[in-house]
Image 1: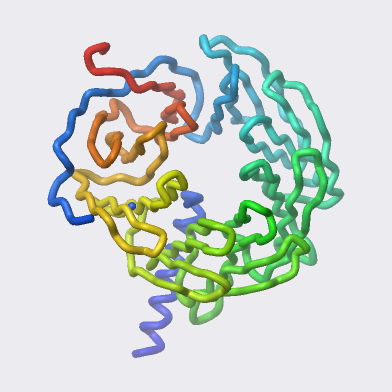
Image 2 (image 1 turned 90 degrees about the vertical axis):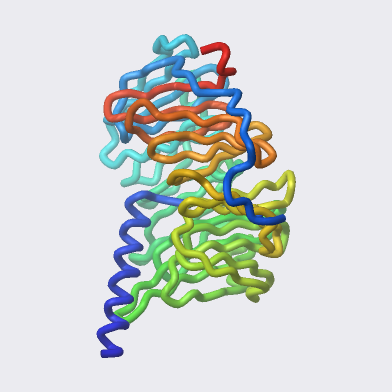
Length: 359
């Protein structure tokens, strides 16, 4: 009976794993039975509707919005007119919309082209090995590829200089680095016959392992540094504070939907089903807000946060509600800096926050 329970538990965890990959991933001084009295002085307004699909990748740049789907990259001016279009004819195209440029890669050769917002290629990085994924974080390019039939991670500068290449044990889940780029985090996953094992792996800039923390029967969904040494780890069952490969504190959670670390106030927002917590970096809950409704994501927006669900968007500033917008149609909401977009089945709704008296 015990073996059967263990196998059922492992099977359930594997199910969670597949759900995790499918949706790709990533919050207080007292408890409030309800949200604080709200002003609800603002709402959302659709300002542009652009043909697209629910799978279209979208990013706003200084002068244009760039979208990618069906092997075509299109730049759209602020007035909704098309600026330029580029068809992608690679055998294994990999397109990532970075902070200031587009990374257009040929996965079979490892060639990465840097495309500016005018549609011009400004650089070509030749890795000379097949690659599977290209991501930019805080000015560093992360490339996931294969080496000796194992996933490896290469870090590069924007001009193509290789900083380090790491071959971790297990499938790569996520990665991060501290401000001085002296330490790199890679979370990995190993699936055994009776359990799963997530690992937080710590490396120096030379790619040498300097620490490791293992999580049995847990899946790591988020990792990040909060300073040069301290690390926050979120799994499917708990939140951890870690330093020098030692767990300093742990809080049990389930059903966590999202986490956002606000570096300006040194706090963490933890979003879970029907609730939002504000925690300090020691894991102490400073405030808890009960949410009326179900929400999936939390985004920073100016000096506030936007909490997004399947049916509505909620805006909170200093834990006071200033916006509650009922979505008119189904589609995922994303916040890109000061830009708010909704991907529906047939279009992109570009939205902005306005005062209610301007509707």
